[in-house]
Image (cartoon, rainbow, N blue to C red):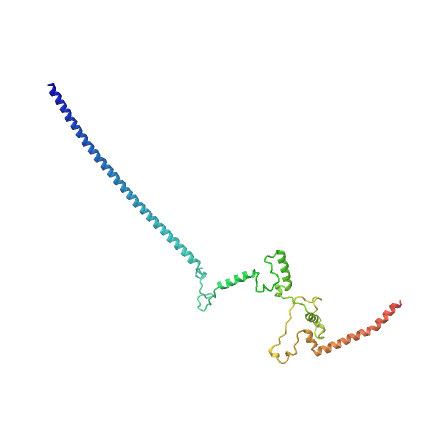
Length: 282
């Protein structure tokens, strides 16, 4: 009895152990399947989230690109408007006035075309540049090269010399010619012009000195006086002295006056001699 009960007990224990083992294996399989399902669901969610995020990023980038393109287009249109406004003429502006009845008519077809100014500007610039150039066409004829840098004192002296050469802007830069003997004689005769003709009276001279700035000219007779008062080329002289010496009436008058002056001097000689002798006696 004892042996049988022990066998039965051992048999019951074996059956219970096998049942427990079977239950444990079933529970393990269920847990594995659940874990696999969960992991698969998690992976699927992550993949979907990544796809959604990538799509949203692409959409945001597209929107940003469209916004930037729109901003660039608006900026370019503004720049074009500004450039077009810069090149518009004042006549195209709207001042709010009626410009139909004006003195100047802008829509005329006979308006002259303005020549190109670029060529003149280039020439003008070249001339300004060549003013500072030391090597001139007559450079080889000069004994010494001119100074490139001139001091302020030297410039002042040079301006003073140039100022003496002309009478100034008020007299239209009248030059001071070189004084020769012929010019000096002519100027002296002009100063004594009241003696030339007794029937003409002139204004008194401003100064006793000869003028420094002057110009000589020739009197041109009109076409109506071609035969009456015109002098032919043979009778024309270079200076005033030569023309007066060639005039017979002037020579006669001058000779008569000279003889009168000499006679008046001789009359006073006796009185002078008597006075001198009287002084010596004292």
